[in-house]
Structure formats: structure tokens, C-alpha cells
Length: 266
Image (cartoon, rainbow, N blue to C red):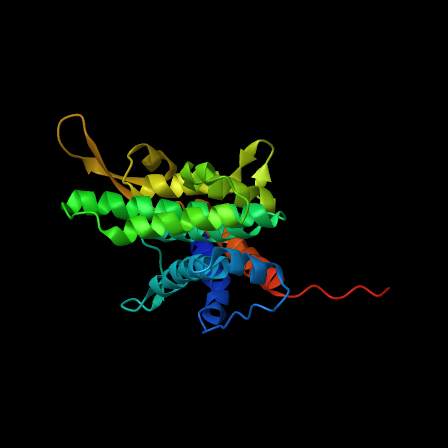
């Protein structure tokens, strides 16, 4: 299918939007100032510091977005072009991870931030156990010790350890990030909707193909028409724009949490 002039303009625009990730990919040392919100959060979650988990989530989101910027360049034809499916997988990863960072950082209640970090760690332990079970590997003592340590941190922070049993879901991260950034439309949480669409493409769900640009190629088997699918560039543009906004807001929120608030003048 020949790319329309409008789609080519959008592809060029996406590439331009992603340019900010060049700077974001530069090594950055996040300095947690004494007396800042995160300094206390890190103390209460050590050795599973909140700031470390947030930096990993932001870095993962940025890496997905920067990878997409690189993938847009078609060196053979020396022009910008768009793969049909892979950009949605990259966008999904960026939305998930940027939302996770916001989810951990955004509560003003420090106890809630600590709880979310510890729930996140407990979920990681459960995932590791599940993988070991699939591999037929005996559960090691280290995982049980880690679980006890996470529970102990919760109790030290005045948190009922039973709350750690609630495994956070992607929907929880995404909807929180949508509300925080204002990426909503009435009752619709746009961040969650973009993620659902990207996930459908990543999983190869057939229903989402009706949103693609389909070019008939002629009849195939009896009663079947063959089509060439082309990515819906406007939908991808909106998803990438949301992912970039989330990553930027997560970085800003991290810097604010890491900075000691100015002293008030009496």
C-alpha cells in the first residue's frame, strides 16, 4: 500500500517527537537530597529503594521509545517508514513502565508510596516463584527470606502486611497515570485504552485488524479475500504522544520527590 501524504507527515512527526529521547538516553545520576520525600521513602524500603525501582521503570520506558525512533529509519530506502505491528509493542512497553513509575511516586501520603513499592516487590517475588515452578526448580531459601524482609519493612512502616497480598495489576498503574496526567476523556481513561489497543496488536488479536488500513490484494481461497495490513498511523501517534507525556511527567515527579522542599520564611 502506498503511504498517504498525511500518514507520511505523521510518521515524520512521530520521529520528531521521539527526538527528546536522545537526551533522555544520556546517563543521568539522580541525586536524592537529604530531607526530600524520597530520602525517607528509600530509608523505609531499603534495600528495595523506591527511587531505584522508579528509575528502572522510567529507563525501561525511555529505552522502548528510543528504540522506536531508531526503528523508524529505513536505511535501505533512506527514508522514515513504519513497521506494521512492532511499534505498538514498543509503545505498550513504554506506557506500562512510565505508568508504573507514576503509580509509585504520585501519592502524597508517604505511607502509601512505601506500600506501593513493597506491593511491587512482593509481586516480583511471586513472579519469580511461578517461573521457578514452571522450570521445575526447587524454591530456594533466599526467596522466602526476601518475602519475610518485605513484610518486616511493611510492619516497620506501620503497614498491615496483609495488604501486600494484593498484587498490583497493569490496569491499576495505567489508570492512576491517566488520572495524574489528565489523559482522560469523560469516563474514559485514555492511557488504559491506548495500552489495551497496543496489547491487542502485540498479542496478534485479530479483532484489532479492523482498525488497520487494509488494501485488498485479490481473492485467495474460495470465499476469502487477501489483504495487506498497514499500521493505523494516527492511533500510533496518539499512543506515542501519551507515552512521551507519561515518561516526561514521571521524570519531573521523580526530580520533585528527590528535592528538599525550600525552608519557609518565618
